[in-house]
Image 1 (spheres, one colour):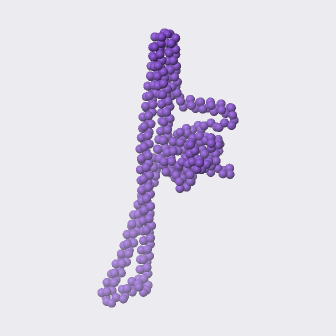
Image 2 (cartoon, rainbow, N blue to C red; image 1 turned 90 degrees about the vertical axis):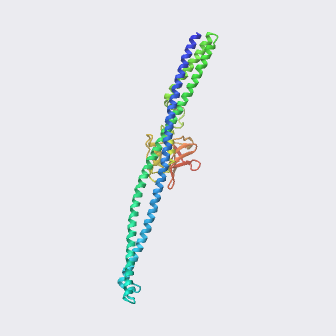
Length: 381
């Protein structure tokens, strides 16, 4: 019996080693994928920063060119008025006119000299006016080119921001997967250790009963290995099923129980929302894209990436949710501000009394605090 027990334990220990090897390999592969995504995020963030700097330079050059054009317009207007005054003076022969200037010459030679002077002044003024108009045309073309370059840069920045948001979601998913695999690996290591200990006990057993007991311990270790393997493959499904069962039991016991957690992956939602706070996206009334958001445009954009279609206004989004007290809000729920029965603002709750929202004109998508501005109620999708 002792030899049979040792054989049985050896098989169980081999199984534990096999599962541990699979779990370790899977965890290593996921870590490699996670490292690759992190590297892409760092690279994309660098490009986003460079894109913002480039856009700022283009906009600064555009503003400078606009100022230069405005100055030239004033100079051209002044020069044109001066030429008009000279023309009127020459025609009217008033005191101080060009004709009087020539007529008052003391000799023919002086008259010719004064005539040449007048002609030179007129020609110089005309040439200056022509040069200023040419400069204005060049600046206008430069401004057009700068505007086109700025629009192109804005589009590139938008694409980079979208790529950054998508990578943030991938990173969150991989981190969740890695955590699940690490848990399975830890269980497999524990099962391996138990199997090895059982093998030692069988070898040291002085009676058949002791050997049988040690063999049973080895079988228990093998069962743990099997459970770890199943958990690694089905962890998310088991959690969802467990939550559904617990929620159903809770609801059956009390009609006042809180509604079920959102079906949307809250960690992915929060990862994307967090990435948007780093992109300096301005508040834009009616905005629903990376070029600008209002409060409901932001929530619609974020949740839409995870298959959850939200209405366009804060009030309509509130109607899509199950209303709960702010104290029961969970990460991924929506927070609403209302007055007199109407709803005028919405945000994404991230936990710990904080939320992400598009506040108001002149501000960017950012974090807010319940203690600083308390919502009226929360809503669960």
